[in-house]
Image 1: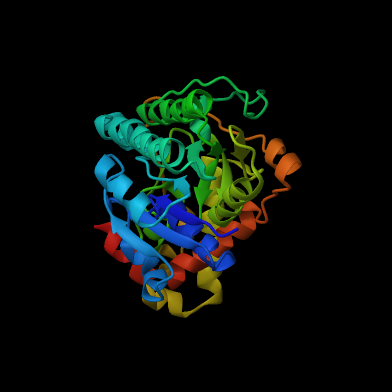
Image 2: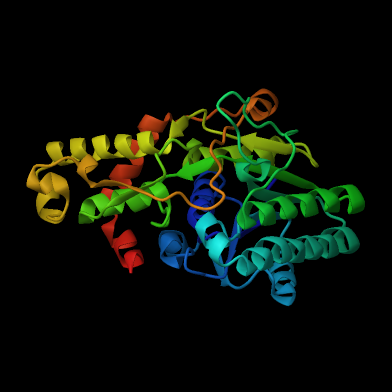
Length: 353
């Protein structure tokens, strides 16, 4: 069965990687990307797919109900994959209004448009997949078991609270109206096209420019890390075989303390400079160009407000029911990530401001 997908937020980090994955593995399907191109959306990330006319791009806001309805009708959309979100915790602390608007109002606009088109209108087979986060579950102690799909929601930041609210809206549209929905809650992603405000690309680009590597508190906060291509594969598995109304946790089985993440990144970067003499001339401000290790750039900074201590995902359900298992370990995924950034300075350099 061929599909016609509308991918919201498809010019952002995870959305871009999903679009590439779907385009390469399902060439007969139609792909329409709807993205407002805020600071974290980058149309250039999709350039190769646009040049080959593999996708259609629409610049627009998911809160624009008329635009959403027009795009769905014009392209006969039967599947929505909803990535569009404000997602940076620090930004949600200083400016929560944008998170409420995009993550709650925007999700509701999409749900209402989907109900109108598919339930009140055509009555066709359809799917609305909502991409969420493990942060809706709150924080764990060292002794707590990982989050499961039945863990109680306890969001601790405006970002996670807005995502929790959007999850509940998606669930409500299934139980109230019968909309065929699925939701995935994922752990921290990393990989190509990651906007350089997040930990790994921030530290990676700062190493290359000789900047300080900020580590909150003592660096003991723990996250579960998922390579973004594995995340795309997990979502694809849900779209193909997931049961309507169900939630699936997608995790990488990779719990790492933030400080250990930064140190591992430093080791990989040191190895790359040692193996490639040209990097010192390309990046003369990097510590390796002066014979130093990247770890010399680590700096501990004051902890942020509401900083959850540990997240961990139990991804047993998606493995058992859909057969999905991540292909990358953190070590292998990090090497791929470093190599991508080293080979794509033309993409990330303009984003540093």
